[in-house]
Image (cartoon, rainbow, N blue to C red; front, side, top):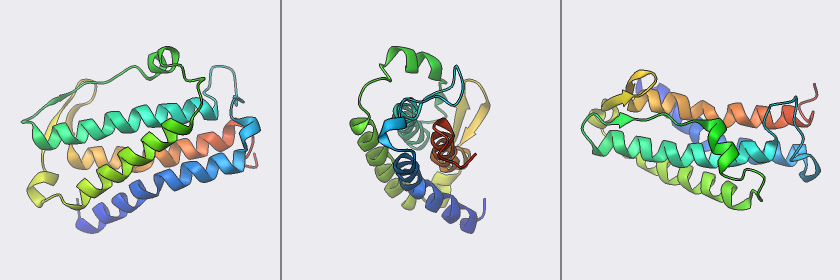
Length: 157
């Protein structure tokens, strides 16, 4: 991956928290528990998912950097939503999402060319590199920010 592409993805990764909080503001607190369709997540549930995913992602990156060819194990997002009380207040999850993302972005800024090439194996997708990690997580929050807007019709649709 070219350095310019990495910079672009890191910037997008850093912007993820802003995108999510802006979407939540547009949605409004009164619509946090609205679902776009049966079986889809509400904005509240999306925020809890983002916190869980970000903390999991932060550990995944650290394992890729600190361990030799770690196995990165997938997790069942739906089971997390069922078992981890995604109906609870979302303030702490927003803070956890933000803090994990900021700490990880600082780490990304310090990686050497060799560290960018480190890899492990994902239990579902196989070869898993630091660069692949960045591509996934740079988009993740933005994708869910758009989903937040769709939950309560705040996207204008």
